[in-house]
Length: 158
Image 1 (cartoon, helix red, strand yellow):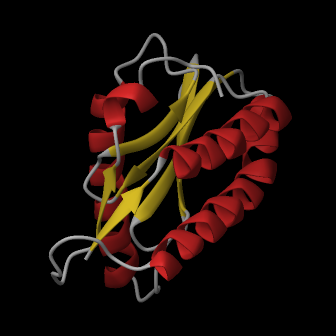
Image 2 (cartoon, one colour):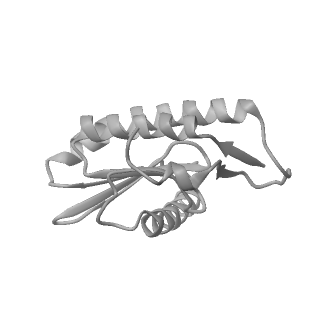
């Protein structure tokens, strides 16, 4: 199924991202689908959000398979911690991921503390989108499309 994200939906998602950045003191974050398509992002200036979301979705898919092999239903988060920069990827829904990038070892705790709340807020937004129903052609896959994406990503104002 294909679900349409309106400007209002993207603004609601961006509001969650802005609050997460403020609370966790992270550098940037984004929301993507399981295929790696960026649905919303905030403060992703120095990195390519499309590349980060595609690679993050791939990492998370591999992690889900590892969980299955180990007898777990799933691992809900993936953390890659580096000397200078780190990234946390969390499942908001079965199809949507929250990706948080941050620097500084002391921020790991803040990111881990506030990401589940943000993921729950994202999950709520996508539940309301699903309640509106699919658009376009029905299929077994769930995809999200941005309505008027050219203007959504044109600026960073909320």
